[in-house]
Image (cartoon, rainbow, N blue to C red; front, side):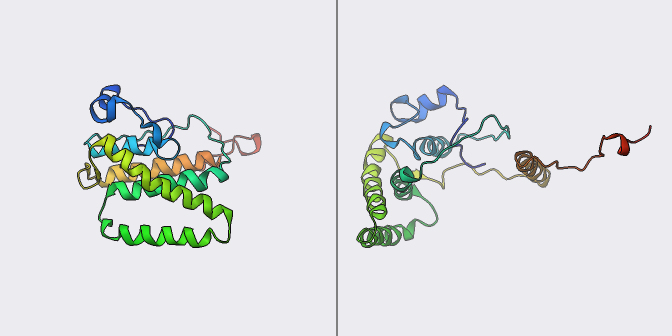
Length: 185
């Protein structure tokens, strides 16, 4: 696991108080698609470790297509600008191409005008987040933990088991307990 985000994320309150702006878990302006990701990245960047427990606790039903065009692009743009990664050297070209593309496509479809607004608002949002954080997120400072082969095999088993449970398929084939196929002791 790298960083935690999304539903059912448990974080110690003390960790939030020590690492986030004003000791709050969320920056109000980062609502939808960015709030939880940002919290996870801040904690991960500050050296907190993450554990993943594969528990299915609920289902998430959503149909947010009209919202995704704006909020998703806004969050994605802000993250691209906030994060220092091995690909940071290509950011300016990518953001220029994306901005120009939305501007041109906006001439043909209103959906792209929403996407362009999300892109521009994401660029503005970076200033707010950077001011509140007081630093840029540097993924080179985040902890990297090497895993042994046994843990990787266990992880792959747990992931496969979780996927198959969702699909209602057993991981191991067992005997059929119907009377015609019952095993004798």
